[in-house]
Length: 350
Image (spheres, rainbow, N blue to C red):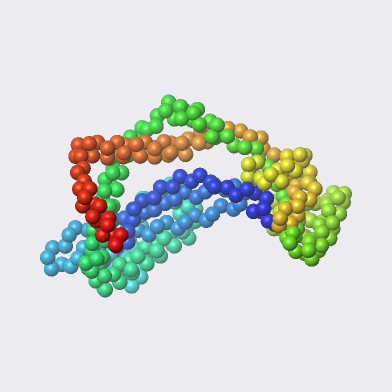
């Protein structure tokens, strides 16, 4: 079965939120999450495993007590009566794991609850981080001047990002019902779900440039058509017999705008449970059965509420951040030495 030739190539809209993170820093790092694209006519992509937890911030070490990174390593390696996992002298406590899971998004938490194996995988990743941290300490890698400078820069960027998030988070009451309704009404056209078709397919491979394969495929196609025209022919059984998937070539529900024009022209004219004539594409012959049809409809506000709220809050946060930075620069106008900048640019080019 050649699904890619039946469907258009889509570019799904994905709203992703990413947080800055760094491994083994003196400050905590933020976990990264990203929503998975919505299933069209293919199986959904597997959920990514949760990002590893990074060491929490530690106070600066007094003279003679080692670096902050060493103190972090010592803390993580210390004994605990509540250890849920250990490798070497690296431990993960129940409290740490609970805090990590609590910081995840709702989607990631639901994935962990549904599949306990993901939690085990997460713990292994956390332990791997602990081992890496111990190796860093043993080699005093973080004390190299260039590495220490990079850590300072990343720490500074992380602090700035965390602070900006704190001053640009919309109030919990936003958006209100009236605002939500207005945005929904203004975007009803974009919330239209096109007509959908539930399809099954039998595919006979026959690349046009291969004449020998083409002749062999034509004989196979004629044999299949003869079986389909027999009284009480079972499309699914014939599809399975011809090497299609165990589901009998079922393609599931496919939106009208995802179907190739050559296929759509045939599908639209089919009655329910009818079978199309063979359709020749570059990769071979496609025979389709229309199992059912769903009419186009506009998604209701309850259906899109969570997604709409998330998008509105994200847009409001972006506006608040820009406004905050604008006011800050207005109060403290920057002064640039254009001559020095030009000289610096010239030296970089050389």
